[in-house]
Length: 311
Image 1: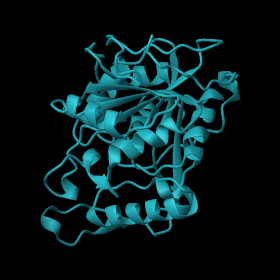
Image 2: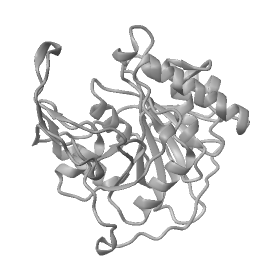
Image 3: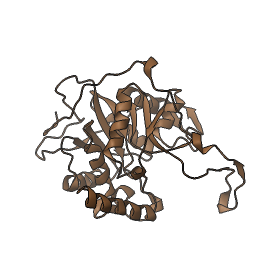
Image 4: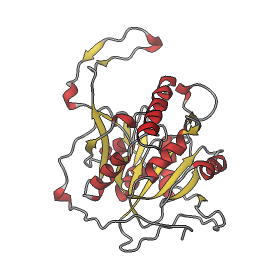
């Protein structure tokens, strides 16, 4: 059992299959995917405990005061290099107002009363650096932290994060480290929808811009427009994406990538033929991928400090 454990737990009721919300399938995912096999790989786990003297274990263990069957964990894949932000430090370690994005993302998950454990999937050669950074900055309060080395792709990193979860975890939130400012209300809305019976849940926003479907051209030349989708039926998907654990593990076992593949875990669940539902996202849950996004994110942090007293 991990040292220093305090759990925010509430009794929740899981609806049956016939009581799901109406499925809403996300747009633009699941292309170029064929059935295949992708099995979890057991790996050693490096733990980041609130008690620095606690002995390391091979897998996290979460205790609950009542039923052990309804525990929520967040997996944060943070192994990407973020080439669009320019060369240098991995994207998740870029600073926002002096604090790495990864720390902001962990804090966002830890602030939720629903999240009992956060698994950070670090770059394959950077697990120790990530653990040290989290020891120096993160303030998880009631949430345990575990750091594991990631893989060569995002999906492999998520799969390795899943392998580090203790058996009592039944709800999994997969969150991008590059979305450091997601509000706690969004995290809890997603978790509640999964506990309510939805096998997969994504937060999303309506589109403000007109969208054109084009025929891609190499070299940056003009691209012919082939369609103008009705934006009223489109949503821009964010994270954390929430899943029934068994559903997400099945998706990672049975969906293999070919060509373009899927761009999120919900797309993998769609390939299983299972429903994915959408809940309201938040404008501050945007993804930091370009230098201008860093400027916007720092502005949001400044506003939070001025109005809420924290960032």
